[in-house]
Length: 125
Image 1 (cartoon, one colour):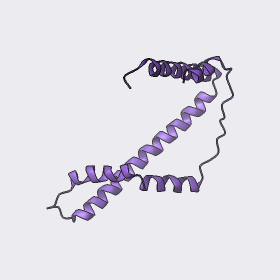
Image 2 (cartoon, helix red, strand yellow):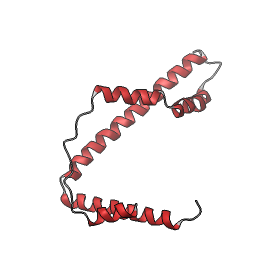
Image 3 (tube, helix red, strand yellow):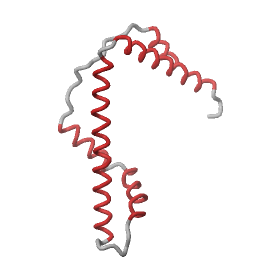
Image 4 (cartoon, one colour):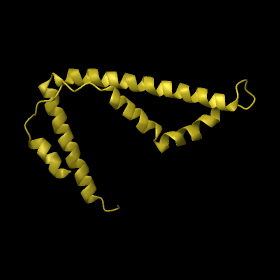
């Protein structure tokens, strides 16, 4: 890590690729499949959603769980879209400034050096 950080600190500013390829439908399907097969997702739903189910409610318990699951997925998806749009706009803005790129490269190098030193000096692991 230290070596990579020093390399970043010493390197000249490389051009940032701003014309990234557009995401394809295949990558979207792949990400959905990864999330569906992720055991942490199932554990989250098993631990979180039953707290909000009421046996005496008008809807049956399975319908309540399905409805809550759909609502949670919509909320998570909307927040992901907002973050993706904000990150894309921020990337385009920051990519125009060579000064910002240089400082980001220096900050990244300094962080790698700092983390590497912390790892090397920390013997409790």
